[in-house]
Length: 69
Image: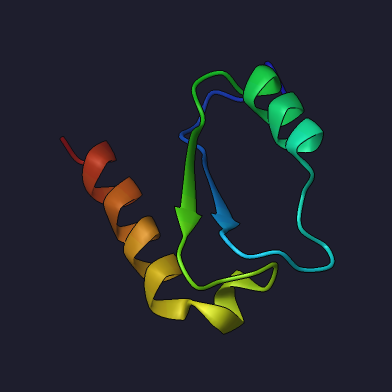
């Protein structure tokens, strides 16, 4: 993961659901991809595209816009 050079946004739901990453798994991702941005999506669990499609699309748009500068 330390070789990742492209922009990374890790989207996480803010609910509690089967399949959600543990705090330890999130900590490993943070350590493994130091430049990654982590965002919590309100009202979503583990199935972000199905539970919060507009929030996922907005996160992608923000990432693209930040890279266009």
